[in-house]
Amino acid sequence: MRQATTRQVVTAALTLLVLGTLGAVQAGMSGASFMYDLEQTRPPLARVEPAYDTAPVPRLARRVVLVIVDGLRFDRSFELPYLDDLRRRGADLELQVPYPTWCRPSYVTLLTGVPPSASGVRTDHHSTAVMLDTLMDRARAAGLRSASASDHDVLPRLFLRRRSAPDSREPIAIDIDDEAELDAIDDPMASSAAATPDIDVASPFDDARFAPWAGGFAESAGGVVDGDAELVVLLLGNVDAAGHEYGADDPAYREAVEAADRVLAGVLAKVDLTRDAILVVGDHGHTARGGHGGVEPEVTSVPLILAGAGIVPGATVGAAGLADVAPTVAALLGMPAPGHGLGRTLLELLSLDDAARAHRHRADELRLTATRAIVGAAEARAAVDVLEHRAGRLFLVLSGAALAIMLAIVLARRDVLHLDVRLLVVTVPAFFVVYYGLIGVAGQRFSPSLLPAQGHFGSQLVRYGLAATCVQLLANLWALHKQPDLKHRLAAANGVAWAGLLMSVTLAGVVWAYFPPPYVAVPSPFWIVTIPAVKVAVACTAVTFALTLAVEVIVFAARAWHRERPAAE
Image (tube, rainbow, N blue to C red; front, side, top):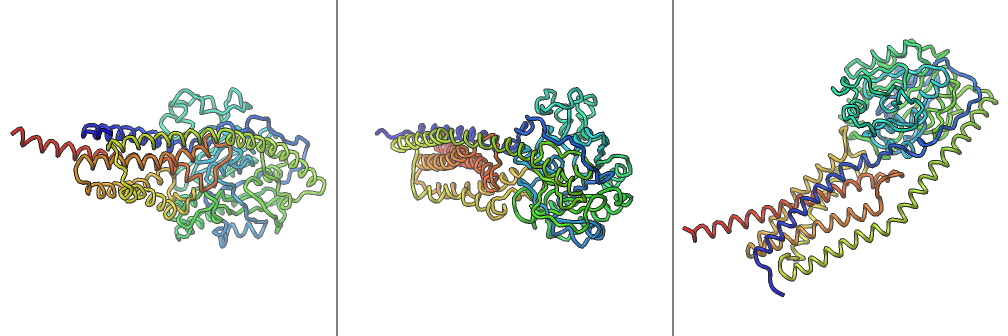
C-alpha cells in the first residue's frame, strides 16, 4: 500500500485536533449538565392530588417550632446546654437522612415527607418550585398561619406558588421566558429581583424572613417566634458553613455547634413548652474533612430533639427517618400530614389516646399505600424503559468503536497513524491512572461527599482532570521525542491521540448506555460520581491530545521553516 506523504500525516493530525476539540466541548457541556439532569421538574407524585385524611383529629400543641440546624451531625449534638436540656424535658432520637444527602433535598424531605428519590429534588442546584404538598399547605388549609426565618437559604423559593393559580400542580420558574424572572426566583438577592417586584408568585409562608448577615438569624428568628404563626420553621446555617470550611473533626466545627446552641437558647427562650412544642433536627452531617451528599454514617445520621406540649418525655422510637418529621409536626398541630409524603407519624413520641393513635396509624397506612404505589410504578416503568433501550445504545457505542478501529487500521497501513504498543502503554494509561486515582483517594472513594467546599462537585472533578492532563501531556511529549524523524513523530502522536480518545469515549458511551438521563431513579453514590467523571475524562483527554498534536504540528512547522529558510537565503 502506498505510504502517506508528510502533508497527509499533518492533515490527519489537524483532523484529530479538530475532532478532539469538538469532543472536549461536547463532553464538557454534558458533564456540566449532569447535576441538573438529576433533577425532576415534575415527579410522578406532583402530578396527582395529595391523599390526606380530612377527619378531625386532636390538636396537641398550640404552636410548633421546627428548627433545622443545617449540617448538624448526630454525634456532635451532645454536651450542649440548651439541646441537652430539651432532651431531658422531652425525647431525642437518631434519624436517617435519605440519599442524596444535600441541603435542598433534605429541606424538601423535612417539609413534605418526600425523600429525594421521589421529590425530584436531588441536588442543591434545583431551581424550580416543588409542587408537592407541604406542611405550609396543610396549615393554610386548616386555617393556621406559618412563618419562616433563616440566615442561610431562602426556604420559600423551594415552594413558590402562582398567585393566579395557587393550587396548580404545574411547576413554575422552568417555563418562564423572562431571564430576569428566572434569576429573581433562583436568587431573590440578585439585582434582577428588584426589576420584577410584580412577578406572579407567592411564598408558601404567611411570614418569611431572610437575614444573611452575622447575627441575622437571631434577629429574624426572634421576630417570627414572637409572632402569631402556629407553624414556625427556622433554618440556621452556621454549622454547615463551618463543616464545609473546616470539616467535622476541627475545633471550629464544634465552636459553630456551640454557637448554634447559644443562639437557639436565646431565640426560643419565650416558647411556652406547656402549650407549644419545639423540634430541633439536622438535615445532614459532615465528613471529617467536610462535605456531604453521600451515604457515609456520619453524613446520614442526624439528631431529632423534641420537647413540649404533646411530646412524651423519655419516649423511644425504633428506626426513623427525615421523612417522618413532617407527619409528626402535622399531628402535633392536629392537621393532616402532607398528602404526598412517604414518611410515618412517630406515634411513639406523641401523647395521643388509643383511638387517636389508631386513627393516625390508619391515615398513614392509606396515604403510604397510595404514594408508594405511584412512586413504585414510575420507577418500574423507568427501569423497563432503560432495559428495553440498553441493547440499542450498546450497539451504537460498540459499532462506533469498531468503525474507529477499522479506520485506524487503514490509516496505520498508510503510516498516517502509528500504533506502537510500547508507546501506547506508556502514554495512554497515564491520564486514567492519575485521574481516577485522585478521585478514589482524594475524592473520598468515589462519594458525592468528595467536595469539602460548597458548590458543584463537577468543578472538583475538573481539578483532578487538569492535574491528570498535565501528567499525560508530559508523558506524551517525553515518549514522542524518541521518534526518528518529524513524520514518524507526528504519526505516533496521531496514534496516541486516537487510542486515548477511543478509550475515554467508549467508556463514556458504555456508562451512557447503562445510565441514560433522565434519572427517575437516583444513581448510587459510586455512579453519581463516576457518570460525570467519565464525561470530564473525555473532555480532559481530548484537551490533552489536542495540546499534544498542537505542539507536534507547531514543532513540525517550525523545523520545516528553519530548513527552508537557509535554502532561500
